[in-house]
Amino acid sequence: MVDIHNLILTCLSGWLHDLLQQTITIEAQFRCAKCRSKAMEIAVAEDGVTSVAFKGANRDQLVITGDGVDAAGLAKSLRKKLGHADLLSVEEK
Image (tube, rainbow, N blue to C red; front, side, top):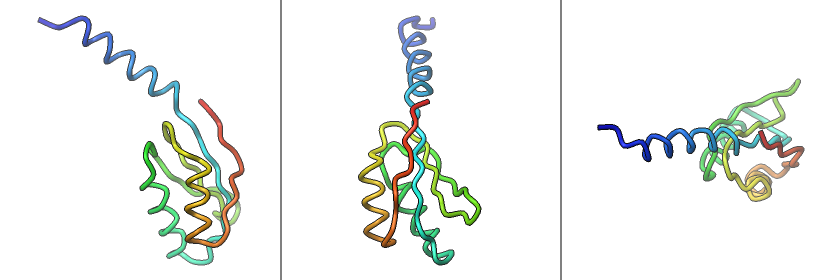
C-alpha cells in the first residue's frame, strides 16, 4: 500500500526544489580552453550546483544554476585560480 504521507512529501520536495533554483552569472577572462575547463571544475565542485554553461560573445560569462550556491564564495574561488572574476547577477527562479 502506498504511504500517502511519503507521496505528499516527495511531491512537495520536488516543487520546492524547482522553486528555490537560482541562476548565477559570473564574468571572467578565460585565456584558453584549459582556463575554461578549470573554471568549470571549480563551479561544479561547489555544493548545490546543478548545471554550468558558458555564454556571451566571447564565451566569457559562466552561468551556474543550482540551489543554495554561495555566489560570492564561488566568485572568490574563481578569482583565486583565474585572476579575474566578477559576479554579474544572482537571480532566484
